Amino acid sequence: MVNSAAVLGVAAISLGLVLTPGPNMLYLVSRSITQGRRAGLISLAGVAVGFLCYLAAAILGISAVFSAVPQAYTALKLAGACYLGWLAWQALKPGSTAIFAADHSGSGAVKNESSRKLFLMGMTTNLLNPKIAVMYLALIPQFVQPDSGSVWLQSLLLGSVQITVALTLNAVLVCLAGSVAVFLSNRPVWARAQKMLMGTVLGGLAVHMAVN
Image (cartoon, rainbow, N blue to C red; front, side):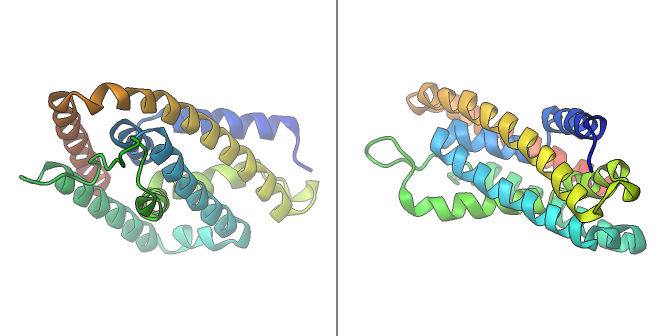
């Protein structure tokens, strides 16, 4: 079965990946800042489902397709770059309230009808994040030992460690960023500055993802 060294190794690498700025972190923090903590947590639920999809793919061996067919990874990477580019355009285009614009009800909470969209966008952002695909392709198999028991069960346990680390840290980021929403809600200048910053960073990530 999975030994403690494997668990600690996956946890350490997962920690480093979560703390490295990327599409998931940027999306979750942006949503939390502009729409509040609840919106960030709903988005995080979508990210969690994305992780589960990759974990299922790893267990079934589907992720090995990226090794056998490099073009599949390239297609995923380009799809992710296009998606980030679209988000950047939504944030920067003139006269737009942007993809990260606040949408509050009278009580200051995110409107219920936006929950589905928040969830789906969180899931999509994660599924189109090639860093996550590579992690399940290159990280999990390195810690699986075929002579130590069921391979799929080891993959499941190690993937669960990664998901636990990622969701815990991202939840902390969402809660911290959500407190900034109160500050921005009555300061439109700061909100516009945040919108420009997020759009610029998203665009930079899209270009970086496409050319690397």
